[in-house]
Length: 144
Image 1 (tube, rainbow, N blue to C red):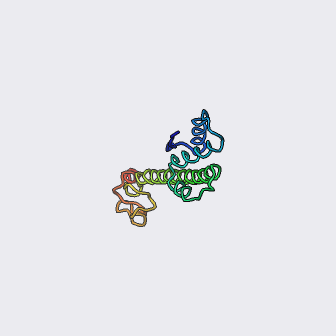
Image 2: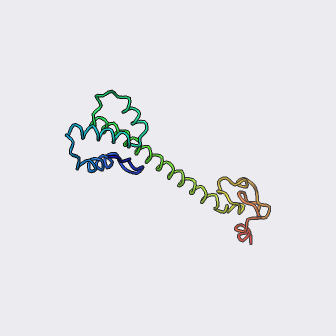
Image 3: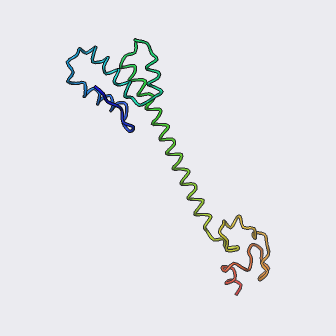
């Protein structure tokens, strides 16, 4: 019997597949569990767990190996989801900033937020009002 866990496969599904493969085996239940344990550890594709399990003495049971692998797999899944969520949030923030940066400033016509405009405290040479400059097309219409 030989089977490796697929990258997207949970430890539970992998174990179920192994049990199905060994279902037709005519060995005793104890020997079947030994074989299942060996194949399980060998094909687990969780290097940190495999190393821990291989370092254990002969008292390692399939149930203990399964519990450790499920726990590690759960931690990995949570970390992966956390990274995906973090990366998704980073994309949202950057796209929001890109939208705001393309907004035209009504004070000078530039591509920035009006609160950050360098002309916010400057006087217009056309109308002498503060907060814009004559060059802005929006303001020149108001100037008549």
